[in-house]
Image (cartoon, rainbow, N blue to C red; front, side, top):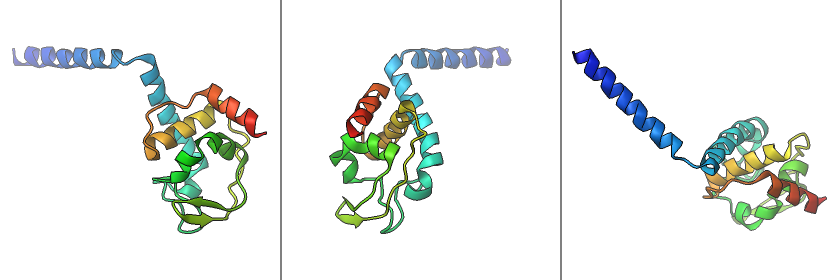
Length: 142
């Protein structure tokens, strides 16, 4: 008898969980996928320099966590990820002058996923960066 109650309770909880997950719209699900994939790609391609926690490397490599640069240069980020960056930049009042290498092997989708992750983690945005937006930004920076 007691086991039957546990089974009913388990199935009730399972039903509630299914209802909540099925209520998410397609864009919310896509955002979560982009954040998850973006984190994986960030850890592979970016974390060695910018660190897993986005704090950068002292006065050599700028932080991403809390970086005003992410807001000021939002429209340039796709180009920076794809083609790298040389020359002096200023992040949160600190100057940096170490070149960032290019990641030309990344697809538009990969760049969109990385930027979605970075924006959600450190720039306070819960919007997905769309592949088409990255494609357009890359066209403008060539």
